[in-house]
Length: 335
DNA sequence: TAGATTTGACCGGT
DNA sequence: ACCGGTCAAATCTA
Image 1 (tube, chains in turn purple, red, blue):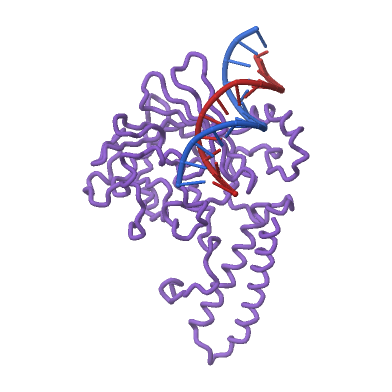
Image 2 (cartoon, rainbow, N blue to C red):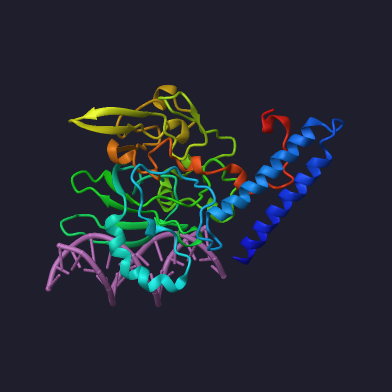
C-alpha cells in the first residue's frame, strides 16, 4: 500500500517533470526525437498512475477510466471490490445473494487425453484454486477458482471447472463475474512483468510432457488475426487463429479454433495453423477447442474466448515496467 | 518465505 | 437434511 502510494506519486511527479522538460524543448532547435521521447515517457507515467487508480488500490472507490468495455447486461453494483476488511462478515452473509445475480456463462474445453494434459489449457488469466467438491452424480470433482488478483486488485472473477462424465476429454468451464484486474500476458510480455506474474498458471504446470513446447522463447512471436476484420491481434492470450460463427442444431455457437500449432511448435505447417477441427492434434499431441453459446459469450466481457475482449484490450503495455530510461527509438515510437 | 494448493469444516438455499 | 459453494488452516513448492 505504502509502496503503491509512493509509486503513484513518483509517476505523477515524473510526468510533471517530463512535461516541464518538454516545454523547454519546444523551441525549434531541439530534435524531434527528443520531444517524441519525452512525450512517450510522460504518457507512460500517466498510464501507470491511472492504471494504479483503476485497481482502486487506495480505496478511492472510483474507477478513473473503465478499462473493460461495458457488458450489454450490467453486472451487479454490489460486486465492486471490497476495500474494507471489516466488511468481511457482511460479505460472507451476502455471498449467496450475489452468486445468484452474478453473470455467468459456460464453455466447453476439450483436451485430448493420453498426452499428459490433465486439465484445460491456460485461458490467459491467472487463477487461484480455492476449493474442490465432489458433486452428486458426477464422476469427477468440481474445482473452484478465483482470480489471483482478488485481493490485490479486488477482481471478483471466478470460474468452476467440471470434467464431463460423458466425455472425460471435455471440461466444462463456468465463468462468473468479470475481470476488473489488470493482468500482464505471461506469454507475450513475460520479460517485462514482475517475477511473480511470470509464474505460469497451474494448468500449464501440469503439462509436464509438453512443457518444453510451451516454453516461450523471447524470439517467439505470437500473432492472431480476427478473420472478421482482418485486423491483427497482438499479443494474444489464446493464440486463436479463428473466430467463426456457425449454426449448430439451431443454436448459434461460436466455434473457436484450436490452439495454433504455430504457438506450440513454430515449425509446424501452415495448414495446421488454420485448423478448426475439434481436438486437433498437433505434433505434440495437444488439442484444444472451445465452444460457448453465442448469446452468452458475447455478453461476457471477461470471457477468455472472446477475441475482441481479451485481457490485452485492457492492458496497456506501458503500464508494465517500462523503465523511464527505456531507450525508445523512432521505430518503437512508430514515427 | 510468499504464493499456490489441499481439504475438512462451515454456511445458506432448497 | 442434503447439496453446492466458500472459507481457512495446513501443507506444498519454487
